[in-house]
Amino acid sequence: MKRLSWAFLFLAINVVELKTNPKIVVVGAGMAGIGAATRLLELGFTDVTLLEASGEIGGRIGKAQMGKTWVDTGAQYIHGVVENNPVYCLAKKHGLFENVPKEEGSWSILTDKGRKVDEDFAEHVYKAGELLLHQQSDDCDNNTMGDYFAEQAQKLADNWEDDAENRNLISSVLRKLGKDLLITTGALDLKNVSLCSWQHFSNEIKGDMDIGGNMFLLPSKLLEEFPKENVLLKKLVSKIEWDGSFGVPDGTTYPVRVCLGDGEEILADHVVVTISLGCLKAQASSLFSPPLPEYKVKAINSLEFGSVIKIILEYEEPFWESDVSKISLLWEEENILTVKDDPSQWLQYLDFFTVMRPQEKFGNVLIGWCSGRVADHIDNMTEEELSAAVTEHFRAFTRNSSLPAPRKVLRSQWHSNPFTRGTYTYIPVGTDPEEMDRLALPLSSSKATKPDPQVLFAGEGTVKSLYGTVQGALVSGRREAQRLAQHYLKATAPPATCPFAL
Image 1 (cartoon, one colour):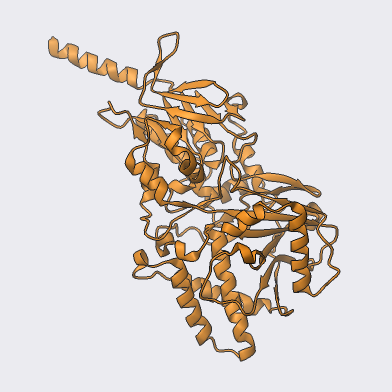
Image 2 (tube, rainbow, N blue to C red):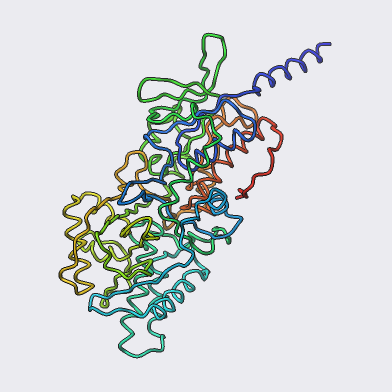
């Protein structure tokens, strides 16, 4: 009888621990937070609150009005044009491709010596450089992307069979590839980036699709079925207290208390933290109580968070041809051996522009891209200074001294935004990509004898096979929802219309 009583008590305790309708708070309404919140709802959790510090959902998918319509200030590329990429699948499902041009458009390439580079030639050199980069090095642990790129690009340029006139152009195009890698990573210097960065990357990421002017629609589409009253904007989280016992008047206790900047408190059974790595670096030491364990702090400090800025330019009339989709500016005498940003020579890193298309919808709008310290430098310029510098820049390359200034200039300013503090994660030299797995691990109660995920983590920086991508953020949120479903022994939800496997 005594043994039966203890067994009954054990079962009773576990019934209390596994509530039928736990309270869950998701911090951050970017794609990771949206992925977590919507999947939790699909899995049968109904008490889910989505908090966002800013006044808009979407996180690093942002928008601004420019000319005739809205443009993306954040993510606008789909990386992996395949059906099993959930972002591609969802964008297609929600009609986001309807206004995306079917044809890619042409590439206009100008040099500082006034030459117009043949597009086929540039494509050939650029793709040869990309092929070298994606060949695995046997010793990636002790090599940097910058050193490897410089060595391989120099060999390619030296061995290229072409006339002397084109030799400088070969190096210039390869140097352009290096600068594009800075934008891809957001790094200050390719020598800071580990050559191992892509060794775990998904093989499904093949082909990029520019859906500029449409990506910002996706977050709201995904939240259409989520209760509007459970999405709370302008709610800055100042403290996350966990491993506690916080009570309410009816006697119910919760292990987590989320404290907001306005003095409000939300008690919960679980909190899913989806803020950016940049914000974790700046706030983790004061955000969590008790403090994060040492392995988690090490993961946060070991990984790096890059910075990319978009300069959005609207013109009265286009100075580019109607079929152009991107513009590149090359310097013929640049050194191919060093690829790092230099704020004192920032215009040399303002060398890539995408054209918003179709013109009937967007008007005459260019988007310039820069990374690292150059992005920070531009962030601190006035719009008048930026407009004047860009105008002289284009006049020099086009040899058109009367080329007009843009009538409107905007910047994305993700680095100075306190709710993002940058754009996306990269893996620096000497850092094990497995740190992303450690960053993703949930925190359980110190009193738990089995996993009890009180604080969960999501975001593109927690997925070593998809970091730096929108789908990486989305699937990481859904991963944490699945973790809670497994904890509560939830039945499998109906199959999703789009794939979400990591």
